[in-house]
Image (cartoon, rainbow, N blue to C red; front, side, top):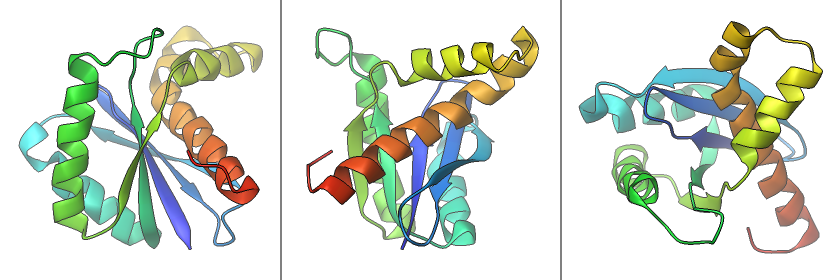
Length: 141
């Protein structure tokens, strides 16, 4: 079963998808975050197009583990996405995924403008790969 990962952002929402075996995550692309009123429906359509049977969404927590307005927005989007897609949506801690994505893109030698365009999709792939690895090892995300 394919899993679609979502890295929510205020301007862009990054997407990644697993292979059929649930071993490897790869960046899929992005969706504009606006208009927010149609975002859940657009993401549900992307999940259907990718053949996803489950969704994983990054839950932005602060470094101390607390949750701010970004986490509330992610929870709200997850609830709308469950309704729009009919799929299970699991929220997973995404602390440091954006920093790791930025570091990987810097190491790849990407220019700043391209890094900005790629960051959310790479972050989604990192979130998904971590989720897949934990699922394979039997640990909860």
